[in-house]
Length: 201
Image 1 (cartoon, rainbow, N blue to C red):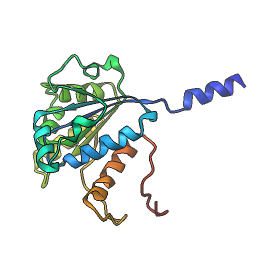
Image 2: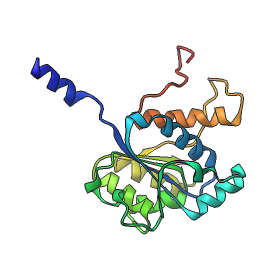
Image 3: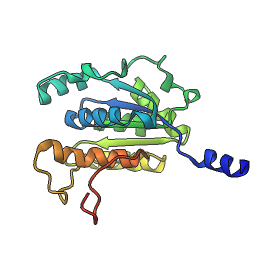
């Protein structure tokens, strides 16, 4: 009985330590909806931290015409705060999600340039063999973008383009954006209700 109990304990999912990075690429709606959904899944998350660039704040205000990021009850870090816990592998953050991920940020990560907290944290996640999810938001891609995506993929990262799906027949911009957010949630290994192909929900 004790052996079986220990087996279950070893194989059960432990709460994750997640950092969300928000850059200045277009697509603030993805960041807003992701923070909303992650806040609803806090029982699966031990620590949820956020780092947001100044450009991201400007884009959020421009695209969403509000500053609701200030209303989330989460720990926010400045993009130049290298004392943030996830700047070191010893903090054991399990997942980093960059949403939306600008091509500049992608390029710095791909070439190992850790000149701010986001690129440093991404470097840490990759070197520790943990999960990095880059929600790329650009169109069209040039060859430099594609090569940077290849470099990050070869290093163990996941490129998740901010490309909505439509088989669930979304009726609003939010519903379309949620098709990307739900995919991010799945990639992060969290359990959440969403549309599933083949069963209608």
